Image (cartoon, rainbow, N blue to C red; front, side, top):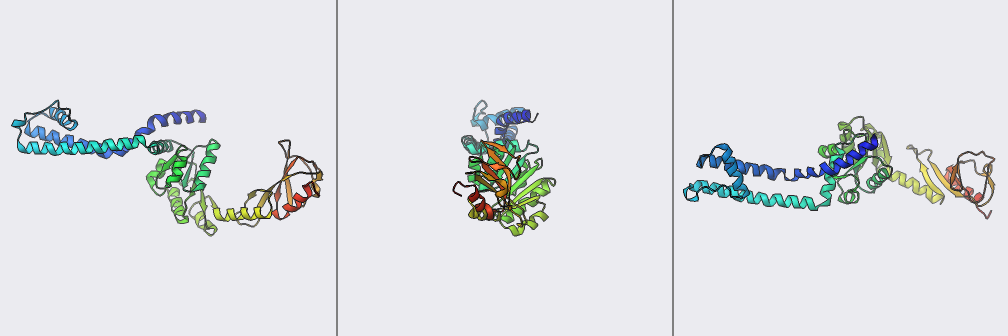
Length: 337
């Protein structure tokens, strides 16, 4: 059933969402209606028409169809003056309305934004990614590759242009209306990664107010703010610059680093290492400070082994442990030893 729901949303998004661009011409439409009303009152007063006929005449004048045209020689001067004013106003409104419609139709971003807003307001249990920068782009593309539903809300035109085919809304992350359009009240989780930690905190407080059960992940630049964000309601706080620094430091120690398993207290980060096996070595010969976790044999993962297992040339060993000992592991597995 989730697959069927996704198909229905895809179809409805294409059929219904574009009509939301009409919000861009609401103001002109309301003013045109007021001009028709003014003409109606003029014809009721000066031409003594009934209201239905006066509305018909008013629409004719505003649209310049010309199906109703009173005898100009018998019209009072004030009536002529009032009609001239309403006609001039109508022409100006037509120009503005046509310009708005044309700009909307030819702008791909307007349609993409409208579709994302419609979809976001109809999704349930999805992820809302809020912010700007490469973190937002990477998170969105990763969720897309996993087939997970998400909506991006960003105030960055560059991010929007890169992701507008992937459910992106160009708006203000601190605006309730834009957050609601992204479906924040029905989302299951939110990833917040603004370029400024203060703005990230403000958005965190806002989304927690709109949807208290929301699973909130915040990306911050200053690790010292972790406790502040947790107090604000964040479920997970990722100190971006601190993590990048720790990855860089691990990579500087050994070229075999394939990943890092982090602990937020920074007391026991574990590094994942990848090593090509160049000669036969028994696992028990490796330093005790690294733990073998997987042996890759002919492209297949083998997690079943003991300390007495002998590694063979052509295999790949994946370990977890202290990167200070990776050079010794690499030396023992290399052909030259």
